[in-house]
Image 1 (cartoon, rainbow, N blue to C red):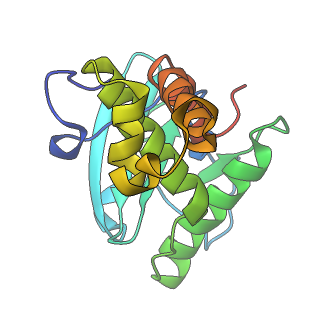
Image 2: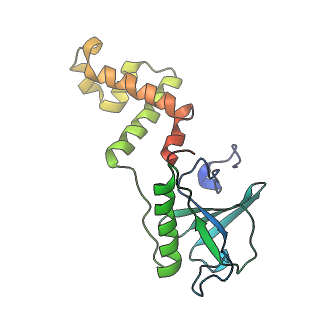
Image 3: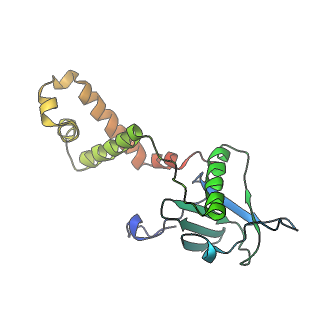
Length: 192
C-alpha cells in the first residue's frame, strides 16, 4: 500500500489491519447513537490526516504530533455519521483496545497520547541486527561486523574463535536476516 521506490518518511504508509494489531476499526454506530458519540469527520479531528480508499475500505492515518493513529473503516460512512470501534476478541484485542483508547482520548480530551514504545534494550538489539545484516550483505566478515558494532579494541582483546562477541555477532546477523525476510511484521503485534 506504499510506493516501494519512495522512502517511508516521504509518504504515508498504510498497513493492512490484519497485519497491524494497533489499527482501530471503525464502523457506523447502531441506530440512535448517544448524543456525545464520536462522528466521522476527520477534518475536525486534532492532527493531520492521510487517507487511502482501498477495495477493502477506507484507511486513515491521523498524526497528532506525538503518534500516528491507524484507522480502518470497512465501509466509507458519510461525514458526520456516528462511529463505533469494533474490537474482535482475538489475539489482537489488547493492542487494538489500547490503540482505541489512545484515539478516543485524543478526540475527547484533545491530548495527544504517547505511543507505546519498544524497550530500549530491544530497540538497541533490533538496530544492531539491522546493522549486522547490512554489513554481511555488503560482504563483511563476522569479525569485521563485530569490530564495527563493539569496537576493534574489544575484539582484539579476545580469542576470536571462542569469543562470546563472535557468537553474539552471528546471532545478530541471523536476527537481521529474520527481520529482512518478513520477521519485522512481528513488531506490528500479533496477526489474526
